[in-house]
Structure formats: structure tokens, C-alpha cells
Length: 486
Image: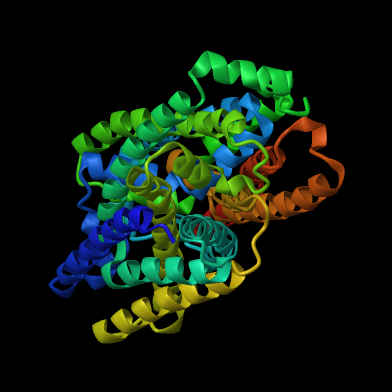
């Protein structure tokens, strides 16, 4: 066990726990526990908003799975990953002021609160809650696996032991601190990600003898590594282009991202977050994936792609510096885990328990159930993560696609199209989810249909379903009600 590496990580964890404790003291004096625990009382400034979006989106996929896939596939995956640069800008431009204003008008604390108020349908609420719980369990499992592999690589402990240590670390500060703890720790973790990425990139380039030398080594090994088509030449432009739907346009439908668009303090905070978030996301996404492919000539033959970043950090940096740099992927993983954990907890507590099971629950009961559900969710995800896949990025992206297919049009058209109604929202969610799951299994067996990413057709089909059912059934119901009143 390399204590020179582990000590900086322990210091980082101590800071995170301190923030969690500080947030818990704010909770104890809060006048609205639910609003504070699940939304931070809508007090996020520009920097914190930008960093919490970057940190939530920049996950184990960005810091472990993505670079690991770039190590395997080459520059084609770097090109594909760069479609994520505009994510934060795109989300805040589309949702931005309108979503925040409507969320405040509806007194919405979660995305499902907004959908419930907008569509006035219990079925929309129930289907939304089920979608979030099912798909985000996959996403959380991916992050748990990434965190465990990082701890495993650093300490030499077994995977299961590393998984247990990581799970306990996250559960402590999220359970006691709620959304404010998540947002503030995200700001710290985002800064750590930025600095860690820069330091590791410089170290890898130096270890590889400079960029020209690294490029020559890659070409000598396999010329396809430096092309847009991947190591085996099968990464098509259609797939790369369609991937932008998954990590660009579709991100508007991710509940863990949309909830941040209702949590900021004022318009100035949003505008600052647009600029900061775009710059930081672009820097991290480009350079982390470049580190992945640059590591190939330095450490050839790594079989588990998710271990590329910790192994290359330990190879190219002094032990103490590696410990500091590897706090970046740990920060990325923890920041995504905490956001997903608090989101699923809010779905169960706020959208299901308080809406349908016990609307008159007192404050003590709400606190007890909130803490209990958050902790229980962590235990369930821990059990799911005990048998990990080879590349966690694909587990994470499966969850992303399912959530986007379910929510993108009910959210966006709910904001901007007055004829959108509960019939269109339900049809869009059902068509999006079922077509996505069906295509996922079809593509796994037969390869991508027409060479595009799985999420492409479900997003299109769910859009058509929303329009058709809103106009046909919704307008008929509206006309019938008007005639009945007359």
C-alpha cells in the first residue's frame, strides 16, 4: 500500500466530509427542510452552478471509462467525446430562465414536480419516478464501480473492499448534508478535476517524449489509432455524429442536469455559469481523453481500460503528486454519485412518498425517511456493483440514453409548446423508453441500426408521439370539455 499516494486522497476526503458536516448544520436551521435538502434553497451562484453541472456531468465515464476507451480505440473516441463540450451551455440556453421561472411558479423542487404541475397527471408522475429509479440505478452502479476500481488501483486492496470504502465515504456526506453538500463539494471537486487534468496531461506528454514522439509510436503500432475511425476502423461518422444527441442535445432531458437549472440564485449566476461551465467542460473532456490515448505507448497492454488513468498517474508522477492528481477522478466520481443519489432519493421521498403515501407527514418523519432512503439506496447500488462490467462507460451511457428518451420532450415541449398535454407526455415517455430498450438489445445482438447510436431513433419517435397524441387525443378532449361546458 503506497501511503504517499493515499495521504493526499485522505486529505481530500476530509475536506469533503467537512463540507457535508457544514451543510448538515445549515439543514438543522432551515425553515424548509425539503426545499433545502433536495434543492439547496435555490441559492447557487454562477461559479457553484457551473462547477456542479460540470462535476455532475463529468463522471467516472469522463475520467476513467472515456480515457480507457480512448486508450483502446484511439483518436476516434477523442473526436466523439468532444461533442460534449457544449453540454452545459446548451442545457442552460434551452432551459435557462424559463425553466427556473416556471419551477418557482409551480414551487417545484424536483423535475417531477414540474412535470406534475405542467401536465396535471398522476400517471406522468408515476412513470417519471419509475424511469428515474430504474435508469439511475444503472448510472449509480457505474459510478460506484469506477470509484472502487480507482481505490483498488491505488491501494492494492481487493475490488469488494475498495467498493465498500468508496460507498461508505460517499454515503456519509450526502446523507447528512443533502443538495447543498452536493453542490458545494461539486465546486471543490470541479476545481480539483481541472487542476488534476492539467498536471497529468503535462506529465504524460513528458513521459512519452513529447507529442510528436507519442504520435509516431501510435502510428507505428496501428495507423488507425490516429484516424477518426477507431483502432479497428469501424467507428463511422454516422455514429460519431449521432452520438451528439446522447451527450449534447439529449442532456436537456437528464433529471440530474435539469434540476440544476432550477437551483440558481439569479440571471447573473446563470450567465456566468454558461461561460465557466463551457470552458471547464471543454478543457477536461479534451485533455482527459487525450491522456487516455497518449498513455498507450507509455503503458502498453493494459487489459482493463478503466484502470488506465490511475496506472498512468502512478507511472508518470511522484507518489505524492499522483495522490493529488488522482483526487480528480475521485472527485468526478463522487460528484456524480452524490448528485444521482440525492436525485433518486428526492424522487422516492418528494415525488412518491409525500405525493401519494403520506402527504401530511411531519418534519421529523420527512427527515427520517429522507436520511433512511438515501442510505438504503447506497446499500442497494453497492450490491449491484459487486459484479462489474469490463468498461463501465457503456453502463453509464445506457442509463443516459434511457433517461433522455423518456424526458427530453416532456420537459422541452412542456416549456415551449402550449398545446403539449398529458396525453402527449405519456405517449412520448412510453414510446421513448420501450423503443430505446428494444433497440438497445437489438443493437447489442446485430450492431447499430443504420450505423447510428441507439438513442437516435427513440428520441425521434418520442418527439413524433408527443406531437401526435397531444394534437389528436389532447385536442379532442379539449373540444369535448368545451362543448360540455357550453
